[in-house]
Image 1 (cartoon, one colour):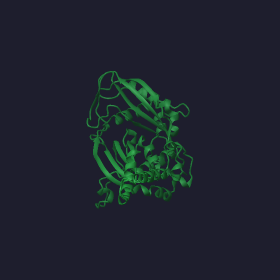
Image 2: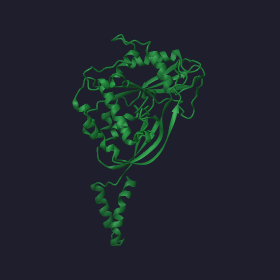
Image 3: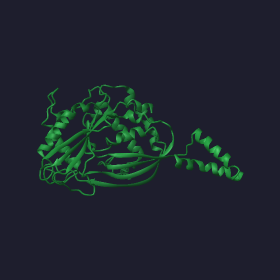
Image 4: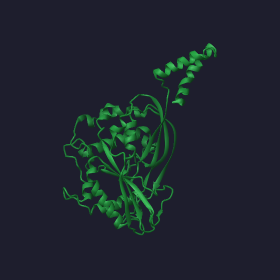
Length: 363
């Protein structure tokens, strides 16, 4: 946990937005794509007072200096300081959604780290987007409510307050919106790599590594952009931290690869689909050092197209197994002693072996 603690200050604010349609309107693409594109257009009309940039320019401003360890890696493309997610009417089985007049359409806006300073400019951009209208036909919306989530701000440190006790457990990973952690790339060499052969199947190691990589970048860009400590970017330390993420066993996987329709760009006949895995996986093993990371990043998403609301998942720790603390051990021994008059001596070992599962169910 020590290695992860240096990223503990990373935080976000969540705002829940509600807007009502002034007429019947159709959303013919993934709502995240429609809202994101229209919000960015509106952001071009909003000017940040302290520096004269438009909000769109502020979103696209790269905050690192050229001597920063991550400058070269992120200069040509970096994760933005906001995330849009939790879209209502986002039925993955229906590519076209109709919103009736006066019906509420809602979504959540996450502002990461110091990007919360621009929250009122984002609110103005949302108001501008509502007045201009979205969907087909382009329909104005009334901005009904913007509420900061009662848990805000949420930091990685909040999840690290939990007891860091090594134990065996099972967890369920539920991919709520399409998660894609790697893409096929055109290669001159036709030989398939291991990743190609796995059909981009999202393993726990890949998920953990992707979550950490995104955390590291968000922390660098929006929490401590001037921090250049070698410990933050040491590849060996990172690999050592992630090494155990490959040990848990995959117990079940009920996932499918889906494509969501994207908005069409001018001059392009076929839009790029928003694709990835949805469904559930369960793993068995020792996850304790990774649970704070995985739970914190669940809302912010991992993998590709997170600004559209892609890559969102949830983690549920189902139960603990194969571990009895000293108090439980004493209780077992006392129970065996009490029952000694009712069972044969040769049965005591069998009874003692059965206790871990019995205790597990009673916890």
